[in-house]
Length: 491
Image (cartoon, rainbow, N blue to C red; front, side):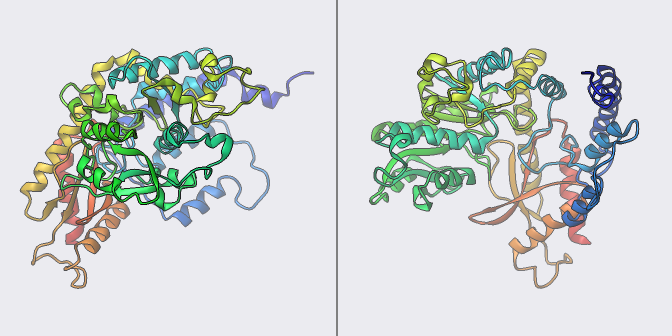
């Protein structure tokens, strides 16, 4: 039975070679334009209009989608790049998502071509040991003791859920997988008032409800102190508190909780300490800044996103445990068609026993390839530069009479707001309301498209929020951002 011509053409290696060369050339040209600050970094389009337009490319409400003309693939893919938020453009200072290293982009291309799942070792004969090597490297960089381990998973939200499931199984007082979530007393953890929403979501997915989080206030630097956590413990009531969730680089402000103090408190009360270092874990690669993570080596579990300050394409998240056997507690199930009938510790090479995902992509390949290509020191240099850029922007804001800084940045996140002067043309109904004014200003930034910032609701009000995620940002971009905001206010 011969392969039909259309299938032969679709899988033709020479077609891959020709289109691949053209695509890489076009994307390299586009990257150069972004670095040159050419074009809009945020080509915003009304969502309804955009949905209709992209639906039309697949025939809208019509019949089957026809094959494209020669060259259509490259033209389409370059068009997608141009229509997307240009994270590589130095005017993009919005979300905590990296401008990926080109080496990581090439590594991901290889991962897509071989398409090996790493849930079982026989399916991923290269991907599985690479992931385990990267996990070991990350454990060492955080100072975790011998016997630590973990796994990669798709994003910090899933990573936090995985860690909290392991915590529940280890400290909940009963076998949840066998007896159910409600076989014991109501469980809870202490969290910061600035906790990432994925923690609250995970607790509710686990069936704990809103009462599963006992909220401790943050201090003036947006950190959860041990004293605040101790006070929250006193409010447990009938709930059994089994853990503390700390932040190392909180999402809203980039604050680092005092991990050593919280580890002391956790040890005193026999609690599990989980550190959400999704954003700040990469600080471990900076000799100048790694002191912010002091005490993280005492955590029971840690989440670290490589797609943030390690410049990997999303999503690449490590879930790390001080004691590797805990990695198996989160998903204590059996699947005979994948795993042999043996304790998971004896089949440690089958990574599907460590994560929710089964056909898991080779997400550690990008980290491994970039470490091999550039060396570890590059990542520390990037972390230092992002922090220095944040401090520089904060300095410009502090020196400006029409801007107000929320707090000095601890990492690469800067929260600030525009404060209109009496002579500025601000609508009368908005002038006394800084929150409304800055929300409207943020909306104008998005609609304009020449810069990109986001916002954060802090206890003191609504603030604009800029995250330095692109090491190609320069002083002129920071100065230009503030002048751009002023211009939008003057319009």
